[in-house]
Length: 218
Image (cartoon, rainbow, N blue to C red; front, side, top):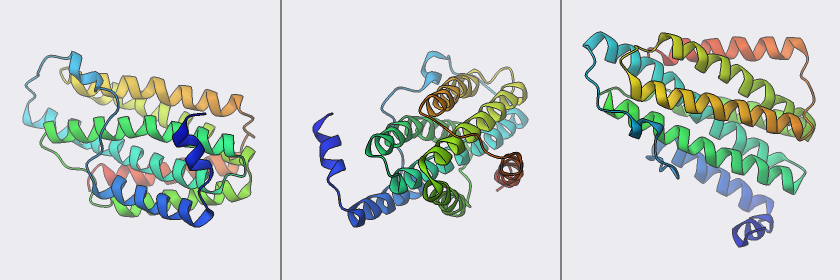
């Protein structure tokens, strides 16, 4: 265990709450910094038509919202986890998702588009859902991660079909995100996730559709 991990394990519950609030504010209002270079760096600059750029911008805005929600979910689940090792697992996954957040925001800037104006709402809602999952128990919380990441993987696969063929930078970002979301699901399952009931999965899909349809426009 590294020194930062030891320090984090000694934080009081109040300190963890304050750190989580700080992380949330930075997620919603600050410019994220990626630890890894964007997959788009390997792509040559592309010229898109106005219609193509608008479509790519809308899809990448939805993906950016998904990463805002991922930060909220992992932060809330780490906050309420009863297992220090699992808490650290959530934090490591969240750090990888920060890269996704930074990549999508950078691509939005390049496309001349904007992130969702409702990002604070998305973050707050996802934090509440993640908190509920965390309070229910660690195995349920892991099950929530598995189902969330599988739905995100399907969602990203659909975006790879919808993104303009010419938009290679956006496609590279989405393809890398899809691979890593699948790995997050597999890791959560291996850690002892409990399968969620079918009605819960359906409710999650309904909430995701509401979020994506709204973020596509706003």
